[in-house]
Amino acid sequence: SDLPDPVTSFLGALCGCLLISLQITARARQVSLASATMSAKANEKGFVKTIDVDLTVRSAAPEEKIRTVVERAEKGCYIKGLLKESIEYRLNLTILPAQE
Image (cartoon, one colour):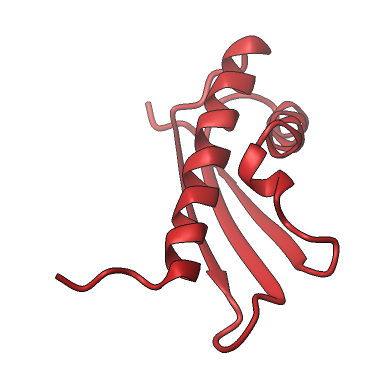
C-alpha cells in the first residue's frame, strides 16, 4: 500500500480542518452553504514554502457574508494555525450560486 507523502497528508488535514471550521462558522452565523469543496497544493520540492488552497462555495448568501465566514473559519482552523510565518499561504475563493 502506497502511503501518501507527508506533505500530501498535511494538505489533506489542512483542507479537512478548514472545511469543518467553515461549516461550524457558517452555522453559527446562520449563513447557509449548499456545498463547499477544497483542494490544496504546495510547491513541488523541498521544504514547504507556498501553499495554495482553492475553495469553491455554493451559496445563495451575499458574497460579503460568505467572505466573512471564510475569514473567520481560517482563524478558527487549528491546522492553519500551525503554519509558519515564512510559508506563503493563499486562499482562492470561488463563489457559485446555490443550485435550485
